[in-house]
Amino acid sequence: KMTASLSCPNFMLVALLLLLKMTRNAAFDQADGELRFNEYTMIMSHNSAANKDTADGDFFKLFGSDQENSMYEQLTNNGVRGLSLDIKLDYSDRSRLRLVHNPIDYSDFETEMETHLVRFLEENEEAIVAINFEVIDDSQAAIRSTILDNLKSTFSNLFVNGVSLADMTFKYDNDLWKNLPEWPTLNEMRSSGQRLFLFHDRSEFRSTEYGFMFRDDVMKENFWEGLADCTARYQWNSDKVSFP
Image (cartoon, one colour):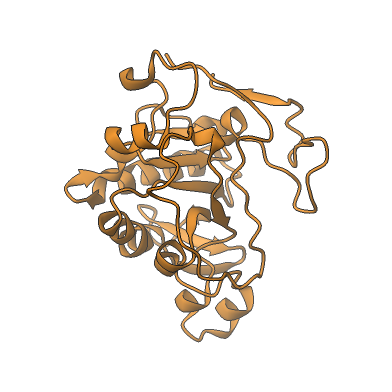
């Protein structure tokens, strides 16, 4: 079993693009391949699905948009390698999830993943992408359980060049990493095919089978106003994180 103790601030997926228009930026997919994942800095867009392309002229969706471009354009042209997504259950069809910027509903989760993420990963076989999920309206355990089932279904049903998204997620307890005391390098992750990182804000969503990681276990997040002595935004009260 791979274990890791990650000192802040080396491992940060920084969501700094609040209402900022992102500039075109070359992605560093082929450079720095010997860097370990916790040494790699990436851009994670805030409320990635809440964008003006998806809004398609709708007044309320435009008003609630945090990003200018679609997720595909963010990944392809803006150098983004992290997506921050708010998800909730679709109460009109409980087998589906919705992408929201509460209280504004933007789109169907699985459709957007296929349209934007799958397309990008197929076109960019060296790209490593992280997704940070926040679950909205999860007051009941039954709702949370249904959301988790739907997430598993989506990642099992969508394929990148014949490989399911579920098989592309990083699984820290995989035999590939059992002798590693640190995170693997970018090149090692590319060679393994495990180049999709999934983080959640719900501890019960942990799943080593699907690569769903509870973010408190592996991530430190600085407060949006700035970094002061590695103070955690969510008061996780530790200067290090480690896998369970």
